[in-house]
Picture 1 (tube, rainbow, N blue to C red):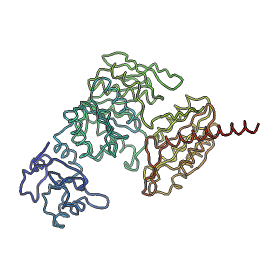
Picture 2 (picture 1 turned 135 degrees about the horizontal axis):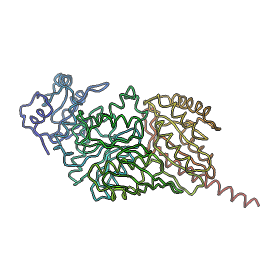
Picture 3 (picture 1 turned 180 degrees about the vertical axis):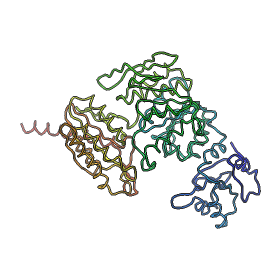
Picture 4 (picture 1 turned 90 degrees about the horizontal axis):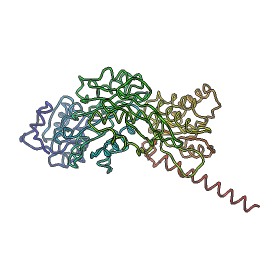
Length: 517
């Protein structure tokens, strides 16, 4: 695993400054110079919103990387600082970073069957289904996504849904070293727009759906769609060799229409290449159905995950696997026991009501979760909901409105307010919730409780026999980010502890009643 500085310059169409030895070997690349060993490493100095990365490179030149990859502005900063290390100059560092990183690590994705999953909702669940199905079919699998990275089932720490290009290519290299055959990864719109997956060779791209999200990054839904389309358009350098697209929404139809080698998926009766039907649901929400697969006929599927949207996710996962050349029966068998952290995750402490924690933090996802829970209970439905700060503000009111149109109790609380004033965020969600309550056609109670732990406590105290509750928004996350400080907070821990406390209080009351008699 090495490439000469001269060869790297040729690969990314760059030119060298201060390079007395163009045969210098590069074995490592990264965006943080402090984490790069001086020997054989190149630091990618990109322009930032406040500072250019070259400023950090100049400050850390004594102990950091041996060479720097940057643009003309960065090269001038390094020269002005008296930095005489070799500098590889390109017009746009972000544009070539994926290709450069892939070259440094020996183009590792060429030796892997790489399956990418994109869309607004369902990426994580579909990825988990793919991972388990592929393992059941006999393959050694790597997973990269929102909940972290795994190599053959073993966790590997990562920070982003789709890691930055140097980290991603190094992960591929590491997976190849561990003899991984197939890699499943979530591919975000940010990753596609910012080129994090450039230099990667995708065998299959899978599209789940599109609904309102990330409009703080993309100005419009059309721009959001265009970012996803980079994974499917035949003339895009990021396009996968083969594609599967769920056509259960209008955006899916559009995506299928612009794709190259595409096959379609549906779980709603829409005509498609892969179709799910005959869905039955047992008393705990487990689902059985069949998927019609080209050249294979009907494949039976059992799914522990509740909800119609998970039928769609499983059908898409099966389609992606088949397009990757996987035998479908063994794959489908592997999906049966999949549970995804923080996705429709039941918290069962022996209580007489249904309690669920879910990552839903987008309007359509919140609506889907509540609709699913409504079908599984005989009693009332309650939800704790919030919205994140420094993110798409236009989805706050719709989240509140859709919640109130479906639930009997809506408690609006904080969910990672970040640098914003929490009360301002809650006010927007409350406006939507109150509007939704007026339109609901049934009595809806709307409360505002800023403290998330107190909101969860109030929801659990409200719940009675046969009711259902969902704490939405954080799912698997274990932190609450307020004013730049992350405080430990896990919805699952909170729900579990509050249910136990309610049980203890009930036992104490019974004991007191007995003693009083």
